[in-house]
Amino acid sequence: HLNLFSRRLHAPTSQSPSFGIAFDIDGVLLRGDSPIGGSPQALKRLYYDSATYSISSLKIPYVFLTNGGGVPESKRAEELGKQLGVNILPLQVIQGHTPFRELVKRYENDLIVAAGKGEPANVMSEYGFKNVLSLDEYASCFENIDPLAQYKKWTKMRAVDRQMALTTDPCSQRVRAVFIVSDPVDWSRDIQVLCDILRTGGLPGREIAHQPPIYFANDDLAYQALFPAERLGMGAFRIALESIFNRIHPNNMEYTSFGKPSPFVFKNAENVLTQVLQSAYNNVQAGGETPPLKSLYMIGDNPSVDVKGARQAGHPWFSILTRTGVFKGKENHAEYPADVVVDCVEEAVDYILRKEC
Ligand code: G3P
Ligand code: MG
Image (cartoon, helix red, strand yellow):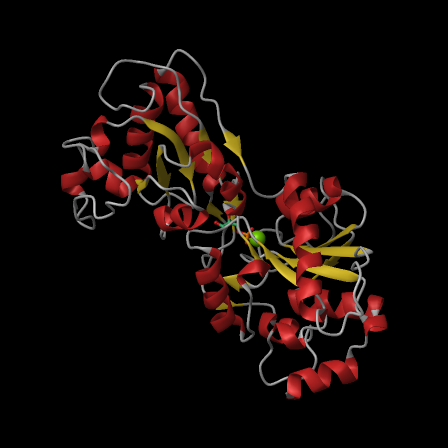
């Protein structure tokens, strides 16, 4: 009741904002699992005074626009909510692999393999893919596929525990596509098994055949985690896999990468921001269409990903670069200069609110 009342009091239709914010996660809001740059305080400023910080008291529409992932958007929303102290809708979470859900129709019942940290197969199942195995599960179906497995004390070989729609033995089923959902954990095993799948048309151990499609959730060469220097990302893994594949196979590896800086990601973020605005102002909107957002802010730490993406997306995107992640320079970045450079996300939000309100 209090929320509704305060919204009616503070947020009449005429005041619904004409701008939205997209937050990068790693290197802007978090490093590892820890909040940085005053991120909890920065997010709280986007709500009307409220005890709940939920969608019903959201003042400024915002989304998380990350190239990371590994868990379904609903779970990530919950995790982020706990880390940052606000209630987040799954709709507000756009991860590198989120666009994979658009490919469901193409592979709905085909056997697909999902790789990376976290729960890659769960992510794909939630999107509607019916016949999916994680690379861990898939590899465990083939005896001796990884000759180094016995030296990997941290891994337990396990049988397929995801029966799902699998009717026959996965080893004899052709893998129709591979999805790199999140950062791969065991590069040596993953490169070996992926080369096997890709070289044989999806039937490891058999003869050379046409390469099935491989999709990457992002192409980040590096990202900022807890270690002071940036860490190798999915783009680095892609280069390693591609270099090896191209040496052992007659044709070069064909692949598709999603994630920032692709203009599609920014177009989608714009649509989602409008949906978030509609959810927040639904009850007080006098009906009719929500007017388009006039300014969209991308707050990122990586010039060649976040800033490049916002620059390519063009109007109405505006880029704000923080110094809490990949970028650590004093002035602006030379190749991909941002519209504004700030020390941290709290300063970025302060800048936006002063400019817009
Ligand atoms: O693995 C995560 C990383 O590649 C990028 O995350 O939030 O900085 O886009 P983010
Ligand atoms: Mg980042």
